Image (cartoon, rainbow, N blue to C red; front, side, top):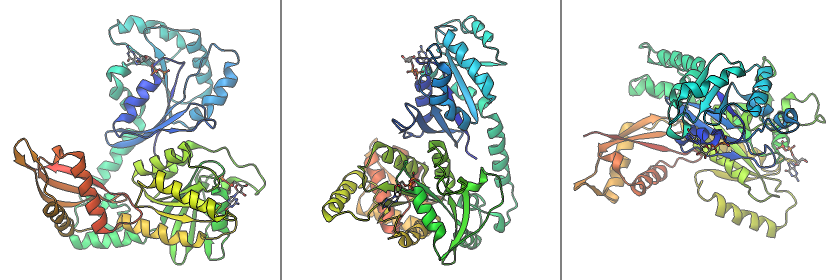
Length: 469
Ligand code: GDP
Ligand code: GDP
């Protein structure tokens, strides 16, 4: 489970500064859903290579009239969805009435909450903090977000239960003995240091596993309609999965001998009947679904322009490295002129995701829906395909022969060998001298070369560089 951290506090205490600090490490894209979630921002962040989601809840001014309503509207959902709340106050400004109003509200939520006193740079932190004990907290943390002081220590404390879990998982993976049957992710297989032959077998098993598919898209693009269409199809066998309501967003199914688990972000299965109002769109649920999926099916509405929200969701999918298929929905009843316009807009705005297949479908009538499975399978297979060291090294060599790396500090960069470093997304690790200093243009050249030569449709690929001199 990927932890969710909410940043709460009145305006100007430094929430966005902290947000940027936390998400910067992996140039996180921000899903900003105007109108839908006010000024809330969502980002992906990392603590020691483990991912978590951060929400900047925007400004809550506790001193305003009707603070309860305002908070309920703006950040209640964010707080509900969070595993941990960081309550920020301004160490320079001291305690304010807004802080007290927010604290009161947070106490009633009973979420693990950490009081974070920000802007302690250049002031006497302990005396500045003394006042804040009035908020009735057990502990407080002093940071200077702008200077990155105290931030890592804070996150280590705030995410301590998750850090424990991550460590336990890591220890299990590092534990010498491996049972091939138990390797349920490509990462685990790579870390297990198997012989080529055993790795081959493990990958084969992996490719036969159910494909976890997340259908995502902004409100009203047709997610529920498509989900219902898929589940209602004659050729689809849907299994009941025991579990709580929380779990029931995972729907196991089978089609043409391939097993899938549909991650139902539209909440279709939670409605008791079709007429019941659709649950409120939840960005967090969508982001978690992306993290948990093998393949993301992004739905775009042909009747609306491609919006920033579409691009934000796309950004998250790309950032997560998951495989991707795009479906342009509501393709029924459009005249040719409109269709051409939509297609050229797609080219213009989504041209950069050239690895993803685009389908034009009508979830309402079922047109084109059947073909989605092929692309989903292809995308999964591309993402989990075993690529041998010899093949990767050969391709790397060809790329180098076609186009020599530049000289750096008077020395020619030399690529030596390449091997796989992970799957879904495939990671290629390139070893050589000074490779970390290669210019971005050459890195992109290599990436495109690998992608084209390996013909990996539906999945992004990543390259890591290792200096070996
Ligand atoms: P938000 O409204 O809570 O999101 O606050 P911002 O992140 O926009 O920060 C408000 C102001 O406080 C900005 O001018 C920041 O540069 C400043 N600020 C944020 N963190 C620090 C810090 O650690 N030290 C100091 N001195 N200023 C900070
Ligand atoms: P969600 O919010 O993404 O789950 O979207 P819904 O599935 O609830 O669909 C939103 C609206 O779009 C509903 O009125 C649907 O009937 C309509 N809709 C969904 N798919 C299609 C389609 O393929 N064609 C047309 N014309 N309308 C559709």
